[in-house]
Image (tube, rainbow, N blue to C red; front, top):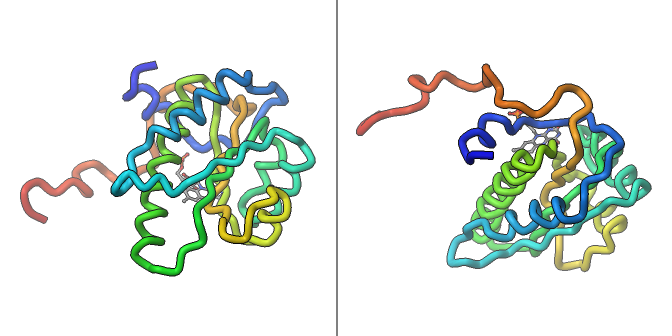
Length: 171
Ligand SMILES: Cc1cc2nc3c(=O)[nH]c(=O)nc-3n(C[C@H](O)[C@H](O)[C@H](O)COP(=O)(O)O)c2cc1C
């Protein structure tokens, strides 16, 4: 898939078929996340991949908006070091956003749908994933083949109008 086509195709998928994602595709999606840029090439992230149904079900409870994780074929939990310094925290989250975008686009390229879940219950996430105490689960990207409608470039995007948000040369 062309990059721009993948960008237009990507959407949050929250309903998945029971079809498993081939390991090679899952690895390609993870490898795309690894290639994301980061400030000073810090790469503060680690990824925990989950395909076990019981673990996915438990993970779906870490956030009120994460119920869809229970039915996904896989989840990639993006983790960061626990940081005190507010600036480093901000930089790490920005970096992780880029990882998330790369993963979503690589998934779209493979015909795999991707959803997000925030993480509220950090203790539960730590327990389910056996995270070390100095790591936190920042966001969950759940993956699978869409059960609602096939992935295809969207004709209309629910976004602010282009002319409203683009300022040329000055505000
Ligand atoms: C940081 C972040 C956290 C999100 N958390 C959730 C979530 O907890 N549950 C959920 O269903 N969607 C979550 N989303 C998905 C957004 O609601 C979604 O991206 C937005 O509504 C735009 O829709 P689209 O991705 O289909 O274009 C999250 C997205 C981002 C970027």
